Amino acid sequence: MRLIESVAEMQDWAWQQRRHGRAIGFVPTMGYLHEGHVSLMRLARERADQVVASIFVNPMQFGPKEDLAAYPRDLERDKALCEAAGVDVIFHPSVEEIYPAGYQTQITVPAVAAPLCGASRPEHFGGVATVCCKLFNCVQPNFAVFGAKDFQQLMVVTRMVADLNLPVEIVAGPTVREADGLAMSSRNVYLTASERAEAPIIQRTLAEARALVAAGETRRDTVLALVRERLAGASLGRVDYVDLRKIPNLEAADEFPTGRHLLAVAVFFGRARLIDNQVLDFAITD
Amino acid sequence: MRLIESVAEMQDWAWQQRRHGRAIGFVPTMGYLHEGHVSLMRLARERADQVVASIFVNPMQFGPKEDLAAYPRDLERDKALCEAAGVDVIFHPSVEEIYPAGYQTQITVPAVAAPLCGASRPEHFGGVATVCCKLFNCVQPNFAVFGAKDFQQLMVVTRMVADLNLPVEIVAGPTVREADGLAMSSRNVYLTASERAEAPIIQRTLAEARALVAAGETRRDTVLALVRERLAGASLGRVDYVDLRKIPNLEAADEFPTGRHLLAVAVFFGRARLIDNQVLDFAITD
Image 1: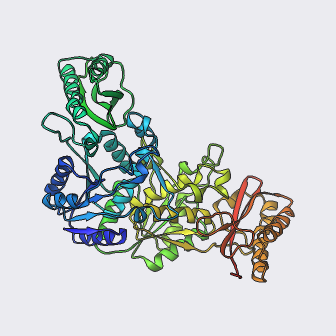
Image 2: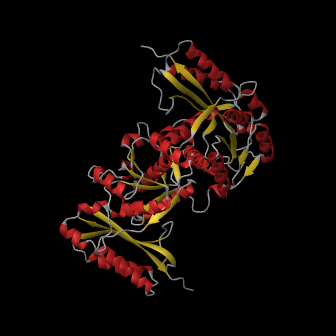
Image 3: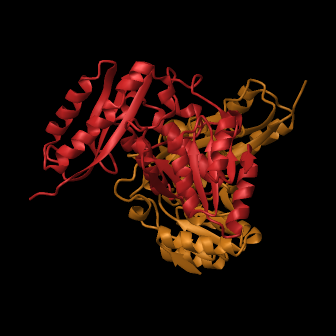
């Protein structure tokens, strides 16, 4: 496994691979890897000749009051996990390498980035779209894998790639969960023991909503009311949002939704803001 | 010479060329070609195995009160000029092909785009940066050629390419002029005969400023005052701006500039807004 820290070396390596007709699969991460990231690397490994994982805590996607400085890091452990998952190259640039003096270009995906997490993190998805475009130009992958846990991120990147005609396929990897249902996240380390014990209420609630829709519920407001009521029962949790949105562009759901929708929630547990989601397939009625 | 109208076909063609190790040179244009564009195509022809010119009047770079609908077009004449200049492929997509329903991604280069033409055309250079990024991803050129007449555009695109790590070299082609010094522009067709007769005052004034600096003038304000005074003598012209800016990021010039600066002007003559510029090399004194 090779560690590359400069953009020029990363691009040179990528050109060599492409010239030899080798398909590159890419997993962008902010490090502090867990089983969720590893599952994306395995997914890339199945389809690609060469797998690149990037580890870059991107300052541009953190707000001024967010946890950039405190974001957890452990490069040595990350290297071992990448090696075990069959990664060929770790791209680990410095902040100065990605944003040198004079840097100023911004990419925005205004409509997809506006609701859900974008409402409380107005700069976040612009920072995500910008760094992903940059990383794609460094790594030149045939495809890139993103976890479905960060579903809005997946939709923002998918939209950006289509809109800018980037020759990269975006592949979604399923959310990986702890045994009790909590979605894996690097931010779970912020949870106290009692918060950790209560947090699986999020996934249980989403599963209940899915069952409700599968049983024939057709009203948006009934589904949202159920989720809000259940989450209100979390004594240590404070709901940031509960929302139902159309896939892929995340417009507000109609009163009687039809087809694929995203049920998305964000809940604060102490220092941690946990997000999770469930795709709901509403029956098309006449 | 081949005419390509779809993004997918353009990308397929580009991949074929790159796979065979052929270097692609690219000249993006809005059509209604003149000798200035042709000089850029010849410049590309000298260095590339394959030359692509795009003809696309980009709605995103026109303001709501600008001349999008009236912008001059003549595809048959453009094809003949491209063929004669040795172009291999004309990329001529429709507006719907470049901006399909749901399109929303925007690229901005805020600081370089802010002064000069950006001050009166606030959305213009974002539209230029966005469409150039898209066109580069369609054509996948090794290098792209831009005319120095649109110097701020050249700096915006250069900055965007560096910031987004796009693997494209940006090459500047010198401004091509009519016999009397007027910079060639598709918008010169808007000039009446009397405006056309007076318009070369722009280039004469820029040349006078260059001579002044070459003779040792070191004060920003003296150079700008000369230019403003001379242009005030154009009875049919109305100055939009006269400015001196640092190269490449177009920060305001110091009172006693040193090194390479851009002297840039925009002057309305009737319906036409004409721009021109002169790079000034101020002596480094101690």
